[in-house]
Image 1 (spheres, rainbow, N blue to C red):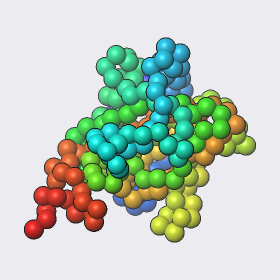
Image 2: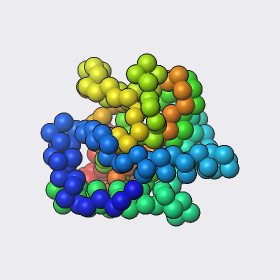
Image 3: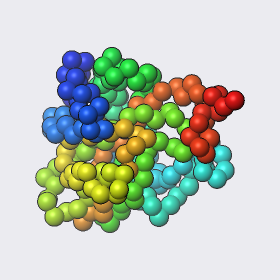
Length: 222
């Protein structure tokens, strides 16, 4: 996987502003995503994955990390010990720089994890920005699946405000999807074969702090 030049991301940034999401098929060549898949499979075999959960992990109630029937599968967060994953992270940092330049989003970091969904696992409809935090701004998914059959299921479905599908996308290897974290309900459907991906989030440092139940940042309250 080669490093991506900043100028290559311009059309993606434009599409993100126009539709709230963008699909980039073949964003990573096969050798690149197959390398990521191999690293993920090795990590799964060495018990580096843990059960996927929901929540932020910073307290009780809505903030607590917890297992849920809404979300299946397992995850492994990318870190400096993963050489192929780190190449991917540098590549995505080029996208972060480009989004800041073109859209003035103030993104200062990117976090990501490998995700493994066994046969029959899914992730129900949700949005990626946590209820009381404004840190996640743009979500990213890259698929790591070879020769995905049309009837295997496992699609990403993005919904509009009326719960009608805007996008239904098979998880084909090398496809990168970007969408706004706060306003994009989506789900991952059940599949008849195991499914691999990387999910990640471009973040701000959340300078306004936690959001209240009305969506108003605490620092902006009178």
